[in-house]
Image (cartoon, rainbow, N blue to C red; front, side, top):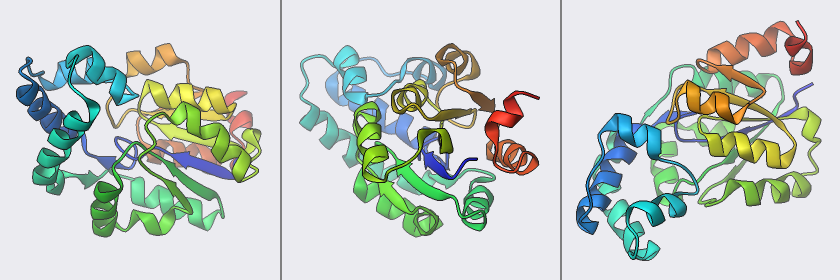
Length: 217
């Protein structure tokens, strides 16, 4: 039975891809390197983002990159929208008394602004933000909250999310509503890939939160 769900934020609950892509290209411009079109960005962007920038903007401090990024992101943050089915899925978790967590790299101020607009924080029991390396944090989260990994599901849209779930020995579900595309996620071998959260909700409802039973059908 799934009793705990850990959510990623970007690409899982909200669509901030255009804003992040825009802000990243601004960083590239300031650093004097080539910008990316959206398709290239989706193929090449990965977490932890410090490693991504080490490849594309070598020699520029993370402090400077961070300053440029947040300077521009503030100008485009209004374009961030909740993803279809995200609100219904969060309500479903609340109705099923599933304990909810957020494990995200999002800047605390950006999370505050976005969650004030969509009120998603009201459905998240334990939000963890500004987590630069989720793989390092998940073991601490599981231990602190005394979670049973077999009863815990991590939902995310990136390879790093699937690797994080594997690190924590929890179930993993990849959604195709965000940054990484199906081929990239398939290579990471999540337990489940769904188009969106409504598809996952239907599976959980059908099998009464028993994901393992659903995989044997």
